[in-house]
Image (tube, rainbow, N blue to C red):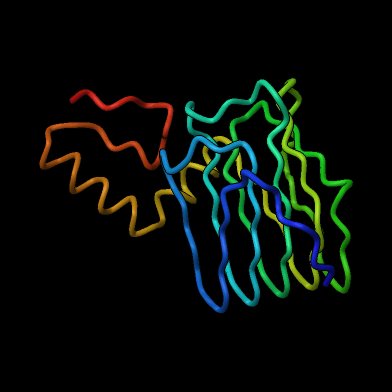
Length: 156
């Protein structure tokens, strides 16, 4: 793997032999630096707090890892900046066609990048401990959960 200089103002995510999930309203950043080795990382970028006016950038350094990105429907993914070694690819079943763009750069060795949109993204978020905790909080507060759909605003 190449060790490129990390992005200056990026949200840094590091996973080593672990599962890391960031769901719901977890950031407002538009730059991400993801390093994962023999790990699974899930990043939810569907929050309305993330500005898609300019391209969002993700610099990757994945080794035998899987990165799942939960995206709004209209976001187009540009994976030309990713260098794959060994097995791996960007899996995007329904490419976005809107003006918003996600730029992927970096290196992936024996790993893959999965893109989830719409209902598939919602189901991915719902199959997590964070969603169960959000349901409990919403029930306790008489509110609505937001992990499954970050565009849904809380009522309280």
